[in-house]
Length: 451
Image 1 (cartoon, helix red, strand yellow):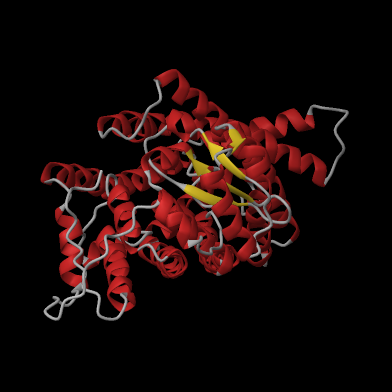
Image 2 (cartoon, helix red, strand yellow):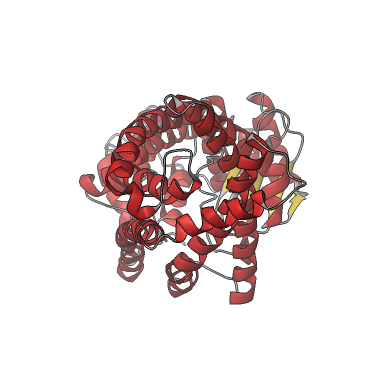
């Protein structure tokens, strides 16, 4: 997806009546009390859940996720190569000159900052198109062929390409507006732009979160009210209990694109919306759905959206400060060769992209850790709210179809922006061991593999 992946979904949680469990749920079987009952061991229980996944399935999901390690590198290398190509070939300078000629040759255009902003717009549109075309082969492999190879995608190529074009249109419109504002800051504050640029970036992120549920997400999928009261009503009860301002739950036809399960609460200031994708509804039991929603609602209750925006703002501020130093140094060394005059020159955009993509690449472990910590907090909230440890374990195994279940600590630190399946199952089993009724003996060895 366009990484529709920087805006994190937010929610909050409560638990549904135990009576519903008896009718619709699949709670862990009760066990007779015995004087010789074996104590529940969370570590053994965790291994028992992991052992339910067939070896072939584990190897396939491990290969898929580990392939992502290399794709992270290749995407960075490609971004660097494109930026260097646009600078060294002076393609970027030619785009800038083209935009200037059009603006200077038009009598109806107002002079001053409006003309300069239009130059940025006329530069940005072909820039985005060129970058998209040059990155398309890797994009096609990563997001179409590879997803089909591992059984995670459902779209035909025409449908996939249609979504790509829609995403490109969104990026061009949104990115062009953002760059026009950012370059206005560059012109007006050439020495302190890194401070005001951070403000612009955060404001843009806030606006994106606000408009995404209403204007962007429906471009890719249809949203319809969930009509099944057995699923809808408990979710709305959880929302009301945690003061989430929603009155209905939406079902998303994500199965037209993927086999993955997901749910989210997105939006702010009146655009908040709870949505479950149809894969979740088809593949998960009611206890599992409740556990997933409790996790998602944990993000809302714990204000993870605001916290992540704050962390993002700190990173952007530091990144812009470093970029300010590196950009000026690069222009002094190679500016004449590239045809780049300074920070306010649109021809320097590939240099900005080069520096910032490098900073993001190097900060991958830090950024992943920040998100992973919020996910662990939401996991804790979700298990305490749903009280469904076995459901949490089953969902973790389902997510393990495309996320390595048992990575090394170093792998998890560098590459995981969510806790691994092993960690999540252990959290569930620790909770289960600590909250079993007094005198009850339980084992966590599932009788059959999780689907």
